[in-house]
Length: 187
Image (cartoon, rainbow, N blue to C red; front, top):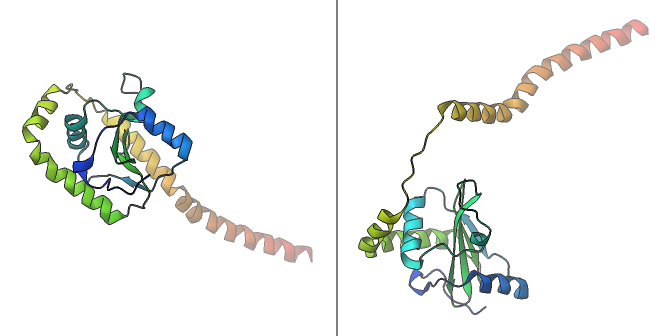
């Protein structure tokens, strides 16, 4: 792959994901950077931006995605710039930027790319509004009892080692003393 600047959003195009997968098999390219987006940009903003610029999601995982909310990957975009690629899957738990190019991407470059995308949101504002209006509206029914149960389970799983240390240590000391005394009685 020629050295290109996948970090320049002006050079981005939406390739056919079959071409990317073929290239992956032929050249065996490896990711040169993988970053979790976190709260740097809202999922709706990123999705709307990508949909406005490139249309429907075109990432490799879209070929196996079912039309439901039960998918692990909700949407996936593939971006190309001169044979360098950026895969942006939106999983249930996070969004990732996975770079495939002939140079390593560092954290500062990733942060600058996010800022470029945020800045470009205003450049495509009117088209972005049309895209957002075209999206399906969903109502979420949040079950507070499930959230509470999940939170308790997470806290319990994280605290088990602490509980074990707090309860087992005194028991071990007690039994060591008891075993020591038993040993003295047998002598």
